[in-house]
Image (cartoon, rainbow, N blue to C red; front, side, top):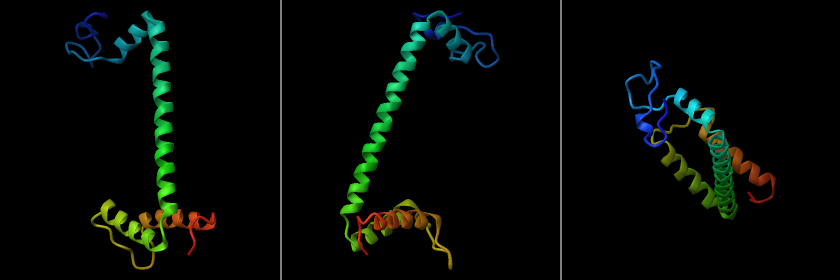
Length: 120
């Protein structure tokens, strides 16, 4: 039973929700079956949020790339050192092999070098 005016009063006898004031998948399915336009609206809103989130992530990535490309070799080294210290206080470099964090950051700086955006 779905109470659209007071959703917490809705009831379902599934083991997950029986006797509890929680929203189970059955209540959601019943609501969207009874109100298909609400399901369409929800999907539209969700997709718009996802697009906006992707745009925000891309913008942040572009800002980081622009910042890194503006650094000198010494500034980049210091930023790498500070980033590793902040990322993992217990960071330790293996004897003959680079740690995964260093490998990732090294690949990033090598990529910048190959693109000609940063000179060694």
